[in-house]
Image: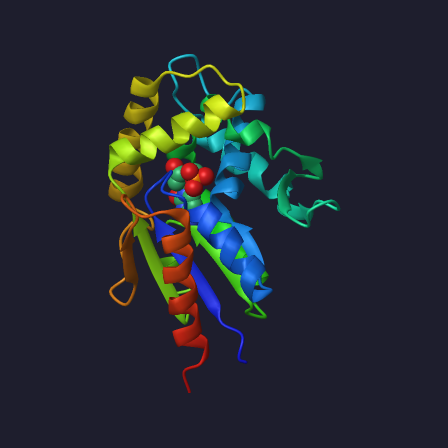
Length: 231
Ligand code: DC
C-alpha cells in the first residue's frame, strides 16, 4: 500500500491530536504534533524573559535566539509516543499548562518562527507515512498532502473538553477563562497574516461536536482507506 501524508488541521482543542495519534498507530505512521513545536518555542521565550509583564513579546530577541534552539521529538520507550524536546530537554508536560497556552498565539504568528517550524516539519514528512496535526499543514506545510482533514467543534464543546482534560490532570482551572482562551486563540490563529488557520479547498470537513470517539475513529479510518486504496 502506498504511503501518504495525512494533514489534520482545525481549531484548538477539538481533539485533533487524539485523532492524529490514533490514526498514526492504526496505519503504522509517524505522528507529529506541530502545536507542540510552537508551544516549545513559547516556553523558551517565557523562560528567557522575552515577554514583558504586560504580555508584550520582544520578537527581535526571539529571532536572534531561535537559530540556536532545537525543537524536535523523542519517542518514550514505554509507549512509543513522541514527546517534544527543547534542545534535548523533555518539555512535553510543561508546554500544556495555561501559561504557555495563553502566550503561544503571538509566537506562532511570527513569520520567522513559522518559517523555521515549517522547514523542520517538511523535513519530517520527507518520506511520507506521516500524520501531522496543526493549523496550516494542508495549506502551507504540505499543500500536496494526499489526505487533508479539517476538524472543528463549537467553542463551548472544545472549552469543556479542555477543562475536563486539565481537571483530570489535577490542575485547578476556570471554565470561563478556558472558553475565553479558546475564542481568543481561534481569532488570532484565523486572522494572522502568515499561514492563517483556514480550511484547504480540498479538505474533508469534520464537525465532531456531537460525535463519540468511536464514530470519529470510524470516519477517520474510512477516509484514510479511501485515499490509500486510490490508484
Ligand atoms: O494545537 P495546539 O493548541 O497545541 O497549538 C498551539 C498553538 O500553536 C495554537 O495557538 C496555534 C498554533 N499553531 C499554529 O499556528 N500552527 C500549527 N501548525 C500548529 C499550531
